[in-house]
Every structure is written in C-alpha cells, then in structure tokens.
Image (cartoon, rainbow, N blue to C red; front, side, top):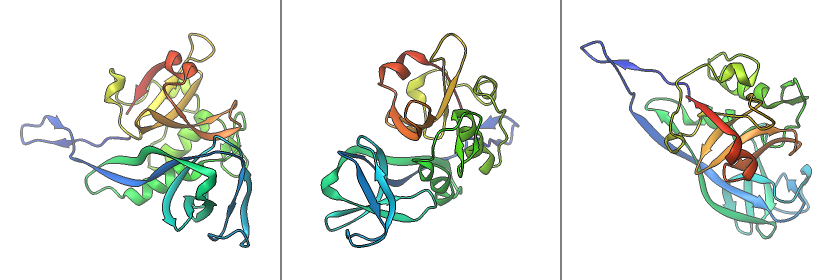
Length: 219
C-alpha cells in the first residue's frame, strides 16, 4: 500500500496509524457456474460461466445465495451450493482517514479480467505488471511499466511475514530475473493477472510455483 509518513516535532518520520477494514469473504467455486443478476435462476445472467476452483469475493448472503463483487462494482449472485467458503476475510489495512470503499473498488473487482500480454486496459485485458500499475495509478502513485522496474520502487519488505494487504509482490518464476507481480490481499493470498490462469485471479503463496519464486515485496 502506498505509504504516507507524518513528521514528529523533532522532524523524524513516523508510521501513520493504520486501521483494518473488512470488505468481504473469499469463496471458491466447486464447479462451473453462471453469475446471476438476482438471487434466483430466472434472473438475467451477468457472467455465463465461471470455471471451477475460481475465487470470488462474497460481500453479502441472502438465503441460499451468495452476493459476489463484479468487475463494475455491482453485486452478482451464485447459489451457495456451488461454492465453498474459505476461512479468509478479505481486509485492507489503510492509514486512518483513508477511504476503504475506494480501495475495494480498485482491488477484487478486477477478478476475471482476461490476461493479455502488454495489456493495460481491463476492457481488453491486462498482464501482471499492467494490472499492478493500473491499481497504483488509481491511488495516485505512478509505477514503471515492467515488473522488474516496479520492484525497485517503494519501501522494501525484508521479512515476508510482515506483509500487509496492498503490498506489491515480485516473483522470478522462469529464472533469476523478476518476471511476475501481484498484490498481497492477506492471509497468504494475493491477486494477480496470470497467463496460466487466463486472467486476474487469486492464488496462495503456498503454491509451489510462488513459494519458490517470491523474491521481493514493496510497500
């Protein structure tokens, strides 16, 4: 998360006070399923079919239905029977006074946007560094285009157990050079635009690929 610093009377920078906001529960589809406009199967279909093992963010429940965050910030609905709830609540840790709704709009709403190498536009597709760059630009922070250059910007996180939601993660998946990036969302989960996953998805740092290849994190 881009970090502002306040200054004490002696002139030394000090950490701002942070507040944690809950924005939803991470859920995973058990099988391919459409997303409906209303909590019934006779309503309009907003998304024809999410694949199995696809993460969504549930923001509300109504009977046997789960309300999930869509790309445009609206709520879609999936039957409770086709998903499993993870134990993870999606939270953001922000400086006191920051708008948590703003961060919500910038984060999980991009789930499902397709992968496109060199892409910067959620309407046509984004690659990993384009996705991270877009999120940070909407928070007023300009980042370089390439992941390896982004990894040089910001405060380094030297211990990965100190990660906070919103921190940028950098991976060397194919060799020694940084070639992938994503945003940490807490409890070991991160969101990224993945070629292998076909677009913006949530994965966990315990996955062997990401566990071995995580080389840097920045705030």
